[in-house]
Structures are given as C-alpha cells and as structure tokens.
Length: 313
Image 1 (cartoon, rainbow, N blue to C red):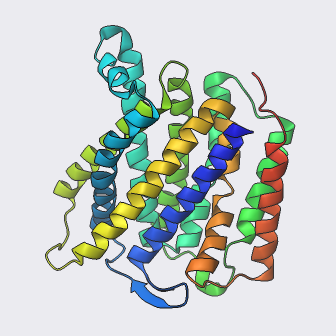
Image 2 (image 1 turned 90 degrees about the vertical axis):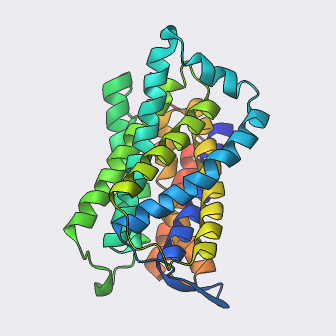
Image 3 (image 1 turned 45 degrees about the horizontal axis):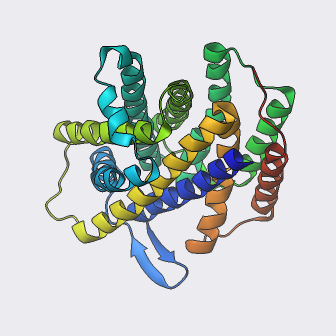
C-alpha cells in the first residue's frame, strides 16, 4: 500500500507541474479571481528555457534536501566513479538523458497541440512500460493489470474535451506527444533496473543534473528572443515547477522501488484525470458529464489496483 500511495502522491505533483506549464504558456483566470499567465509563446526555444529554469532551481534545491532524506547520497554518487560501478553509472546517466528527452518532447507537444491532447498522448506510456518490462525483465502484465489499464485509459479518454475546437492542430505535436510517452516508459524501466543496486535518491539527483546540462546546451543551439521576457514571473514559475517536479519524481522513484515499473505506470495513467479535475478547480475549466464519469472511472480503477499486490515474476 505504501508504494501505491507514493505513486499517487507523485501523480498529484505531476498534475501541479502540468498546470504550471499551462499557465506559463496561456493566459488564465486563476481560481476565477486572478488573471495571469501567457508569459511566453509556446515554441521550441521557450520550452527549453522553461526546462532549464526548472532544473536550475531544482538541482541546487535537491542538493540541499536530499542528504536529509538519504544521508549516503553523496557517497553513493562518488562510488559511481569506481570501475566496478560503471554499469550503475551508465544506467544513471541513461536515466538523465531519458528524463531530458521526455520533458523536452512533452513541452514541444504542448506547444504544438492542445495541452489535454498532448498529455493524453503522453499517458499512453503504461502500455510501453509493460512492453519494455516484459522484454527486459520477463514479467508480462497480468490479466488483471491489463484490464485495469484499459479502464484507466478509457477514463482518461473521457476526461478530454471532445468539441471540434479540441482537434489536433499539428501531426508533429502528435508524434512528439507519443514519443514523450515512449521515452518516459523507458525512463521508468531503466529506473527499476538501476534500483536493484542503486538508491532512488541519488539516481533522481543525477537525472535532474543531467537534464540541467542538456537543457543548457540546447539553449545554446535553439535560443530565441529573451531580452524582454517577464523574468520575475518565469523564475517564480520555475521555482514552483521545480518543487513539484522534484517531489513527483522522488515519490515516483520510491514507489517504483516498492511496486515495480509496470504497476507504477498503471497508477501514473490516472494523471490526466487528476489534471482535468485540478484544472477545473484552479483554472475554472468546465467539466462535462462525460469528463466527470471519466474521473470517477479512473479513481475507481486505481482504487481497485491498489488493493492487489504487485505480480511477481
């Protein structure tokens, strides 16, 4: 139960992160009282800028807080320099690369197509996680997990706006949205493999540090007009995004260690429903009867999954 609870809390943090990104890219009425947002255009350079600002705040913050959560954080990281720890170092760096790729792809998708569509495409990742876990670990999903996956995806699909205005605007955005889901699935499987010998806390910090370096390099290649940007608002958004992202990945990685990548991915598929509900509360986005039904279906499915022990290989 603890593992499932950690993954659900991670989902709530990721929901907050998604809403922050939406606010930074689009003007909204926050809680129906404060008109804010739309600080930067949703394009590739600004996507990398937001990703850089998030990690520029998050990496030092994590460096301060992580030793409190896990006192051996820095000693474990130093041990990666030993020849015997090269496999763990490769897995940790691979996790960092995959984190950067999935976030960058998701940001580009949000910039190209409607946010709800982009997130739904991203949250196809449990299917790919189950497939990769089957290939890598030889643990096929059970019939029960497969049924829950179908119900969660059905509920997530029902939470989407189905009006004509929500149609896809760019096939490039669709490709990026799906690619972000595939990449995140790889990240969760790499994390599970690494956690067999390496603690989630230093693994998470290495992932964020790698993302900071890669996003900084990307800004050197794709840099936009940054002279007149509202830096105060962007740094506040970066701080809030960093805190929610750090908490989400930390809780999710701890959950993966307890229940495995496939079960964690199935629970993570509830995030579109959580996002729709939180957007309704904070951004005053209206929910139709179908969307409310979808949220109820997802919540019920997740509750059913949490009552079952993870399948053993």
